[in-house]
Image (cartoon, rainbow, N blue to C red):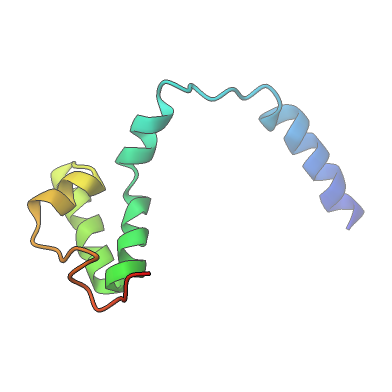
Length: 83
């Protein structure tokens, strides 16, 4: 276990310290991530999330753009009760 602890110190010192986020790029990077399709999978099911992720990859669009051009259901159309 000590070996892992030592390695984590080296990782932090040599790789993590000093990293600074480019705050002006963060929103664009977040919006362009197909990981957002996971949210759709949670709401509408895994097959729908996968379809959106594949569409994004094939067409080079964001998840938001893919959903806007698709005929995906909206949360109010789903069988999930609203709170």
